[in-house]
Length: 166
Image (cartoon, rainbow, N blue to C red; front, side, top):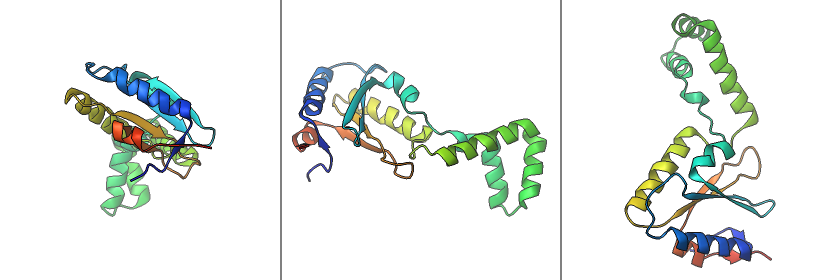
């Protein structure tokens, strides 16, 4: 199956060179991650360590206050009663801070890039390297706030299927 994304020749060269340089290396948070902006044909290589600085993760739905509030609503509690229970358990300020943070993330969007997805990338990457294979994460940025970022893994097969942009 051909890869649906097109890259510049310099991007393909960067993929090949980076891929070759990782063979036989031990796992580290200094391993590379590529971020590709399709609109500008901009490829950025950063360390895994810096990924959370470059792509902020949305962990607002993982706050205990929000989890408790959602559970109460799912159990059929009235909206106001659920709020009151959360106020009693977590305090008014903490509960409202969590609600505000959750609302802000929903408004600005993060293209589906959650802490859970980041953790899965981290764990998967480490397993690949520890099994003496090489694959490098490539995050293809969503083109608008509604399109999710896509995660691809750069391997020899991935590189061989790449097409060059005009």
